Amino acid sequence: MVEGLFTPLHLVLILVILFFLFGAKKLPDLGKSLGSGIRGFREGMSELHTDATDEPPATEPRVLSAQAPPAAAGDAPVTSDPVDPAGA
Image (cartoon, rainbow, N blue to C red; front, side):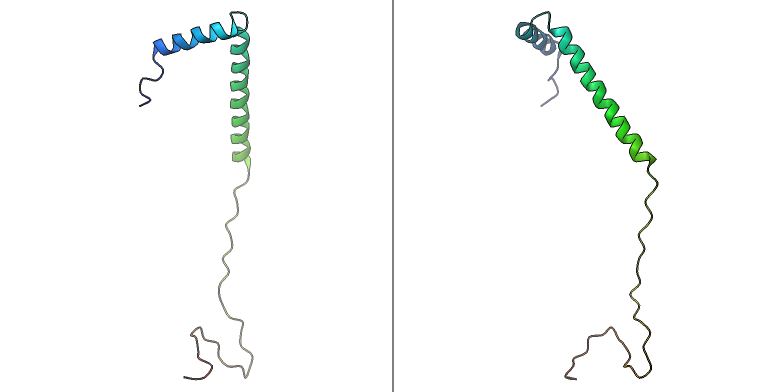
């Protein structure tokens, strides 16, 4: 579908249309501004990439264990099984 999108004939046709729309005097200025915009975008992306790699690695999250607190003397033992309070 996109295979033959930018053949040399298509690019020439686009350049001719741009020439008629903007004129010969403005085309170099448009090219310079487009080039500086792309350059600025690339510099920003490289700064973002270097900033991301300079950060210290994140510490691994601590996993809390599911241990019950120690039982006091005389307390009923704690079990993880559900118990019916009616004893049925």
